[in-house]
Length: 146
Image (cartoon, rainbow, N blue to C red; front, side, top):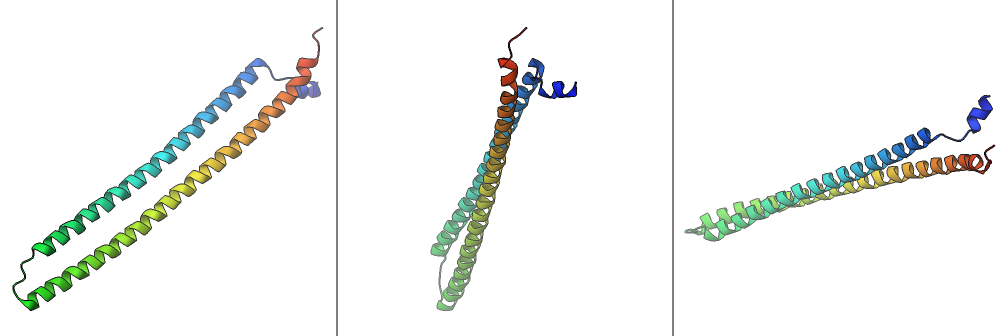
């Protein structure tokens, strides 16, 4: 009797449940993709805002340097040396921020790739399940009703 139960075609309720499961998994996959895309956009947006702020700071420092009244040669050399060091540090900071941004982008891209791969694996598994269920359903459909 258990052999008959194992080979019996799934009922409408089971097919409906499988369809609902496939739909729910697709919805979950789409939500994961949206969440990943949102995270990437937020990371890029935050980094771009920080870069814009640093550019404005550099611009303000350059303006300040040009407006600086240099009255004596020694004062001018000291002020210029301090400002050049600060600009070097800011450039170094910008380079570090760019590296951080690139690392964040790489991490986000890796996360997106992993999510896509996982989703594709899940879709492949679901497709295999659907094929198996169809194969199991075919004999049931082919048997004429008595």
